[in-house]
Image (cartoon, rainbow, N blue to C red; front, side, top):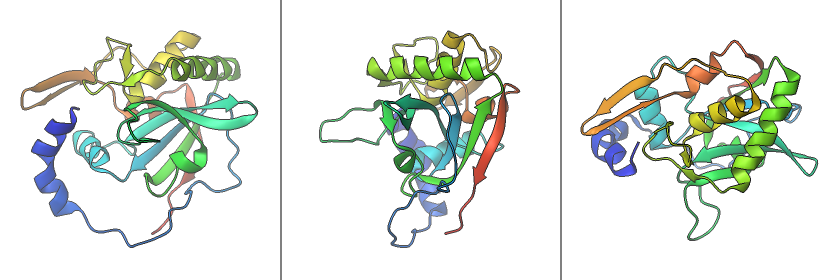
Length: 208
């Protein structure tokens, strides 16, 4: 959703429902013994305003963000389309590649889960497509329009990578979102999470 629209429509009740988190050193909430495989789909519930908006729009969903595990020169990384997580001054909202420690940092994540495609070959192909998307420096899609893949939001990127790899995670039905003058049809992370082509491998829900 457009940033200004999110703030305008949802900030009053979001502020009312927010509590200050205690001052802490940010840590990776993913346990150190979790072994990631290329093509794994990772989910997190975020800590920011956009995550709270998604939770309001999709109350049955457990997560607000998703990404795909890739192998980058022998190191497991996570490719994901994300807004407001800039690496340097002048950076833009785009498809990023982060370490699991950053993706699952307590700065960004309250809880997380790793799901693995039941088809290992599909998983490897999907990881390859995700790397291609990252290398193209695809920008984040603030219109949440998955009919145009020149820009992508997080769920759109995951579905696009699986589609390109030859595996359709979900059907063609989309959620019809109407908020003020903003209208779109999109998918939530929960739609990916419920796919029968994925199986849950690890869940982590730390207590703060």
